Image 1 (spheres, helix red, strand yellow):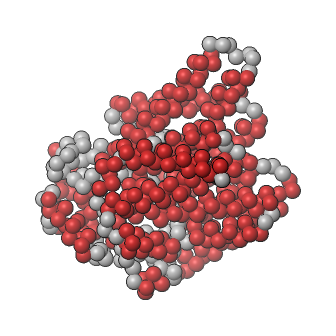
Image 2 (cartoon, rainbow, N blue to C red):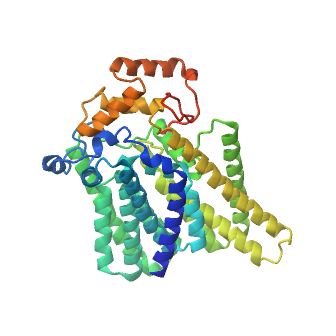
Image 3 (cartoon, rainbow, N blue to C red):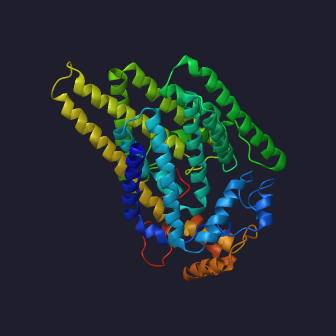
Length: 461
């Protein structure tokens, strides 16, 4: 109980700081898919999600995610049109995920100080803002929470052999799988997680039993998914798929993301890369064998968790790999610090120099991540041109008719009209202007109703 209290306090403090910095975003209205996904669903619609696409409008990527509809129905029925409450709900959901992830990382072998470094880098990162600010990504956070709980029960079963833990492991894995397909990597990821924390040969039989059981669950979902949803998305193994995986891999190492536009952003990116390369080089020279194994395990976890990009690459889909890679950075920083303190062959002047360099490196990662997170928030402002186009797709039924609560549709249409967008022709005109003359739109944060073009698109890595 003492550990969970410390983790909860750490998560609460970091999320409070983040909420203060991004307080203005709590009043941002529903965005894009939020309009038709976050609503009350009829009993027939909920039942159909268990044997067909979860989206009755057939706008979203086809899949078998019935648990996501239950969450959307809760948000649409209980939280409803209170937009501030919706954003608070997202932060609360992320807090639950982070507490569960924190307890897991402590169980794997990280210290509380290492955990604080991991979470500081994670909360300040671009991917954190990307996930929390878009309300309909609540199901993604829920899936991640179920995955982390599956890992908890997996390790408990392996170490203690209790069948209660085994049953809960299967249950949480099933809930995660029927919420989001990121669970497909779990049967491979969790044995590596065990290797990071233990190498007892007596446990290998349990590891095999647990991994094969989890594989059976995800395989059953995959077969059911492709049988019930014929046009379901499948992994692809061409050049574009490999490129997506490498993009996800690279972005997961970078708190501020891959894309850099301004000179300041390029400097932040370059300095972070120099810091990571330097700290890893020192780590490989100084680290003990057991800690090297832990570091390698975290890197392997992050790499495997990038594999969902084989199907489709999303800039908000790298939450778990980012946590894994930030854990690797934290392990390296902690071990280098420890070895610099205890080794007698290190010159005295090098110790404070290395400590200062590591501190500056972590501050660069945190500052760069926050800077890019503000850019993510900027791209979701109601008067952002790209956001206006995406909202108009649903509000004006440009592609498919969308089931949107009447009060929400009226508010959304009024918002578009305040920016001079009230018809399909005006949407097409704005789209043409963006394609042919993007320089005519200012690229800075606007406070009025002037349409502007954000420096970074929300969907950019």
